[in-house]
Image 1: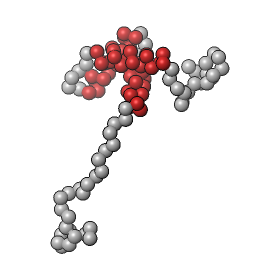
Image 2: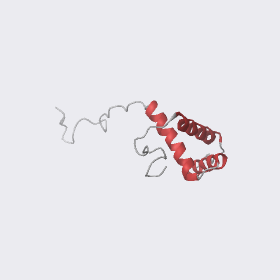
Image 3: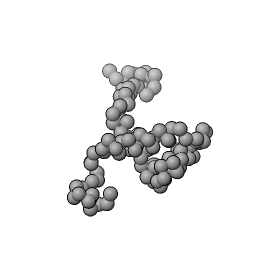
Image 4: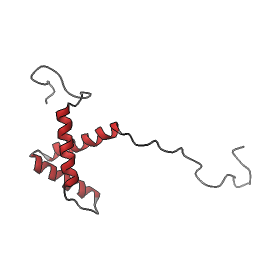
Length: 105
């Protein structure tokens, strides 16, 4: 996919929708990612080794494998957004200032 677009004249790029075939590729890549061996105590090396396994099994570059895994994760995040964060409460349990006055009154 170049910036000129596809052979049929349609442009692709930011904001274009993924087809079902592309989503299947993302799903396959992510399943390989989950099944791959990794380094349990090092997050960075774990992810790198898993993405390398995806690239080897699918016969693509590491950059493309990483993009497919990231696209799958982003797709799932948009489908099932995380729960909203709780409202922040007071920073400490102290409600009075040093002079013994309540500043919130």
